Length: 468
Image 1 (spheres, rainbow, N blue to C red):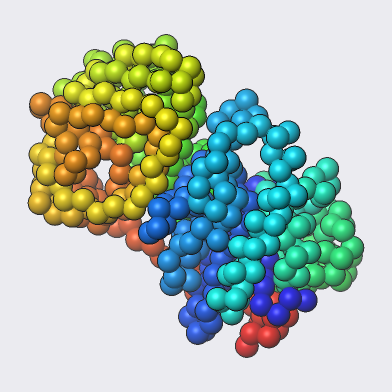
Image 2: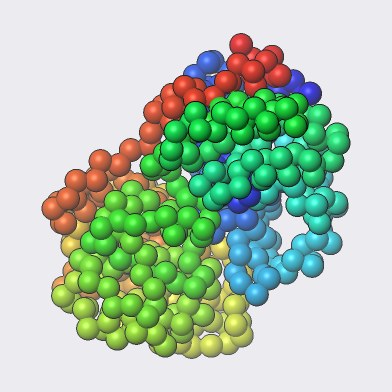
């Protein structure tokens, strides 16, 4: 076994890998260890920009915060941001290098293996323990020769492996058994335990199943985690289905939606709105998009387009990043996404966006609130934090965060490039005041860590990596 690494592998996507990795980072950090998260390759719609302007998946950023350290591009050296039709934007060590289809990507695996190894080695030199998160299901036997995030990194780092399965999806014992049995023999030897996640019933009902699984695999079940109402950012679009807020806030579910984690603090009062719905909400939000022009066209051909025109000036409309671009008068693509194209925006803001080069702006920023649109007027003069991830430059006549964003004359529509805006406590309080609600959102790293410590036999796991 590797002396300084734990790996959380899963039976499926969305089995709880990110959350368990986050909890382990927090637990180990509180024990006094210098610990860092690592995910060799992530495919995620949701990303974060580090202090030095590098882009990584939001899950690794949150895991870093749980460990008490700054997010770093080495923690997620390869990020794929899906755009549809087998095409993803490829981000290597925090820098977007271009769009790529799956066949081209697989040809790059040999060189990407070296990138992953170098990033991992660099983190290992700096931190005592690395907590590795796998990707998807760990036993994708069709991908073993090119599985960077599971097989390759496990062979390279030789960690103590935990396999987590989601009982809510059904078939958890078969999933854990099958995943273990399909792993290559050298990886099976590294498996230190199983974890059952998202139990809504009585744990003692599982006792005979757990006993049988342990006998069949000669691997202990480290424990059972109950269903947690997690307030941590969602990893991918699967999690959108879990959002069932009161609907005071409607978030338009664009076909190529990205960074919907921007709205996680609003989760109790927000729900996603399909393009053919006419939502009855107090605030309608147009979120980020992986392809603004394509999503704008989809929006304009759906029922929600007429609805937006109808509620403009009566209900508050907010655009973030791609959504902000859509709210302007015009978008001009000089061949960056679709060849030369001029497209009329929704026309609610005096703003125009130009895509002149395939250059992406990724930067973390602090800005003063200078606008007086609805919600933000109550915190005018205060500072907000956020991060930008976008192509295109927007020219605006009425900026609201110093040089960023735009507002309508009546203040009932505004847009900004600032991702993470609703994670600002002052802005969240302004939303509460506007809607007359209480959100009480917080990053409950310690509560999560305590719950996991209570439920799992971590001493059995930590003994594999010389942690007491």
